[in-house]
Amino acid sequence: MLALSAALLGLAVAGQTGPAPSEGWTPLFNGRNLDGWYTYLEKHGKDSDPEKIVTIEDDQIHLYKHAEDGSRVVMGYISTDREYGDYHFRLKYRWGAKKFEPRYKMKRDAGLYYHIIGPDKVWPRALQFQIERTNVGDLITLYGIHTETTIDPKTRSEKMPTFLPAEQGGQAYDLGGQGVSYLKHLAGDHELEGWNTVEVIARGATTTHLLNGRVVARGKAVRLVDPKTPDAPSPVTRGRIALEIEAAELFYRDVEIRSLPPEPERGKK
Image 1 (spheres, rainbow, N blue to C red):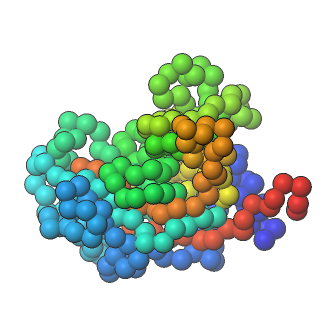
Image 2: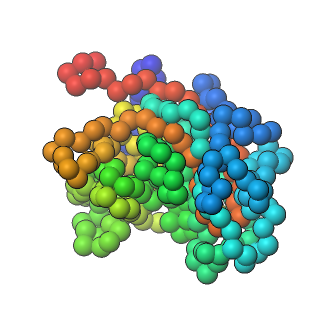
């Protein structure tokens, strides 16, 4: 327990690489089928995929294998059946060659939803680890979810301020609202050609985003704010996890999770 806590503390320093592979990881995707998951797609709803948007092959999830480049496609996600809290999650992704309408002329885009709460819809109430060309690692809050973070003060007036750790001069910022709010990842393009590793450390009401072992965004005090009772937010510490499907050919593999000890209550060790 102490060793794990020390490893998590180390991850709080931006730029530090993530932990080496260790025991305790559990595959969430078995490489053969979507046992433990379900699809949710525009027009088709839950567990209906007549266009074969999702294909399982070679221990990978292949999105839009059968769609013609430039054609119009449906979007959605692949969600876990279960809710999760206090975890370290990771997966690998790489882009395919094809893009589709309605995003054919836009950047290749996908994402990782987590802490999904409420009913399925496109798009759900959740936090998101953005997977979009040049923007991988952005922290997005959707539909009432807020988080406290720190930003580069030079970007405070921008619609999408940029994450900067407090120890590097970042200033406090509340991210969230009733729509969709964006925190750009730590400055720099940390995405690689080929396979990339995405990680989320969600412990209590805190979250940390890592891309290829580098911390690129952090948040704390994750909560749901009802506009009718803004002074009584509800902490958000768990929810479903989903792999986004957003009109770009993409491959996911090595989807796995490990449990973390809960955060100690204040005043207790």
